[in-house]
Image (cartoon, rainbow, N blue to C red; front, side, top):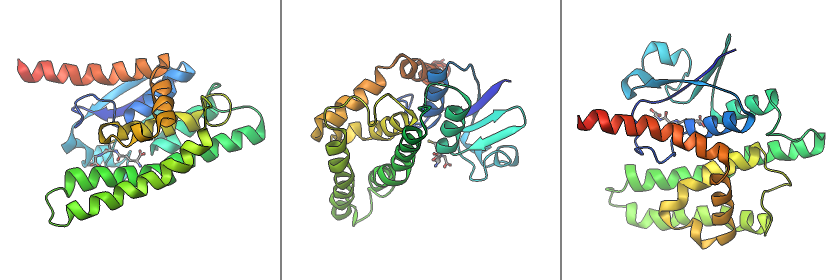
Length: 219
Ligand SMILES: N[C@@H](CCC(=O)N[C@@H](CS)C(=O)NCC(=O)O)C(=O)O
């Protein structure tokens, strides 16, 4: 059955791989599934046709036969459940990998998103300069124990899993802040994730969309 995901027609990051379709593309590449992409404009996100797929009017969505999913955690989990390669077969190891998926999205990602909001949406507010160090402190409070847990291992719990895929996807958003480099083992962990051939293919595919847009804009 054909898999179709949605992505930005024109990503605000210009193709740095920060839009969340990249993590879905990565999961599909890891398990060797082909997929199609439907590009959506910002305007179309909030129109009825897209809202029928995603109640919050966001990307990415995932369609396969009669199934429609939204939320990257649910999509990556579905891909990992349906295909070998992203979750261990052993029950306990599988449960631990799923725990890391939840930790990535529920515990690590929120303060990282807060930083983006503080900088880009609230940067002009009078209280923004005071707030920024508080938000950065909340990120460090997550990265310190994460760094201690990872230690000098390649991945969080044995072999690479969907938990690592989501955690790397969340952490790489921090690179431009400099905070990731305060934790050399986490910076190396992210680099290891980005060096995986499946990530490289996913990154190149989303970049191609945005490079195409640049060409269209300049012509
Ligand atoms: N929790 C959602 C977040 C989805 C999300 O924030 N998508 C962004 C792109 S990365 C989006 O569509 N933003 C446009 C909007 O919210 O209007 C997920 O993990 O899928």
